[in-house]
Length: 473
View 1 (cartoon, one colour):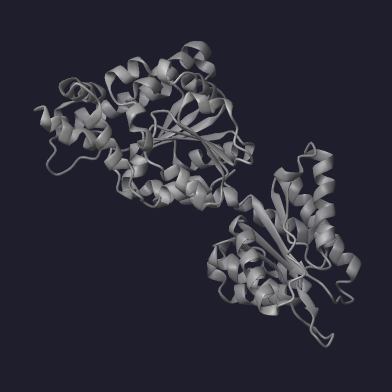
View 2 (cartoon, one colour):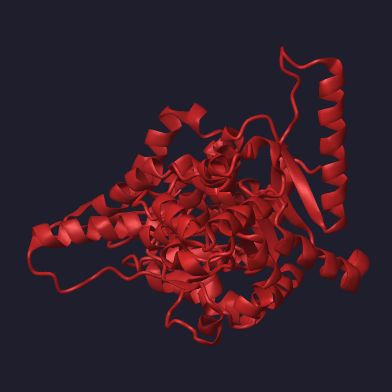
């Protein structure tokens, strides 16, 4: 057994390294209203006088239904009716498809994963049949392998005993690709019972080939809890069976995260998303005016050092090209990337210049607000420095764009780091945050530094310490 904290630490690392994958079973779709395999077969089993609750080999039940009918028409119709509904993704699906995970496997027939990716503005490359494996969708953000088929192609879906026996003939290469992914990626199995013969065979082959060198994967399992109607003997049996199942999964490198209630999975996934986003840092600020304590060169040096150190510490920096600081942020980030990060610019730096040349002020305001929302949606930490600009009379005023970015960051539950010492919007944000300091426990040891420190090394070190404290690793 692993704790949720251990899982977060390791799986976040896999996501950051680009080595994470998801394997989704029927349990992931159930909260959206879809039935699992047993409920799909229940009315069909009743028709042939079988009690589905007494049956453990569901593929065999589906085969009996097919045999009795003489064809697959009844099964195909049930599959199409059950999984072709236009249903929105549940929160677990939405979180998993928002995360920067690029490989999804599923035995589900529905379209929830594809819909979730689309709603997250991600371009999915869906593989349902083997002929699609040799093509690559342009600009894809994720690949979805539907190894048991799709409700829209019910006649080809994997359901019966014969389908499993002939799987490699009808779905050639799927097992090989999954085997390769299980060797090279860290999987999260969610809503999956591990009773699928395809997966069991693949995991067994990997164990045979790699022995103790198998990769670590993770799954959720609801802990057996003794109810009022359960005798000590019944509870003991169920607990022993669960322990044996956990040990058996360990043979294949699958570590179990036990939960008391399925709602805990959503909480863990929320924490997972927050942990992933905590690696992405947005530096907000602008400067039209300077003073003796914070002259132009010093502000630029601060922006440079912040970006440079954040990249060195493994964070990804986002810049909106703020006036007076944007170039320094970019230069600091690029110097760190070219020195230590193998020139992998996109992995460590995101440049989001604001749209220009919009004559209508109302249109510009609306577009810029939307743009800010999109930027901060993908960042878990927001640093605010200086933040001033000229008004129409050339006078110094607080940059309302920085204040807007702060409000959006708050709405998104970002970690807020206001460098109040630099003045401008950053000072205003500092005052707002300080007035509600119990909501910002991560700033507890840094209030004085953030408000008064003018030494660049001390200020940058404080920011790095705060940012690192929010990481699960």
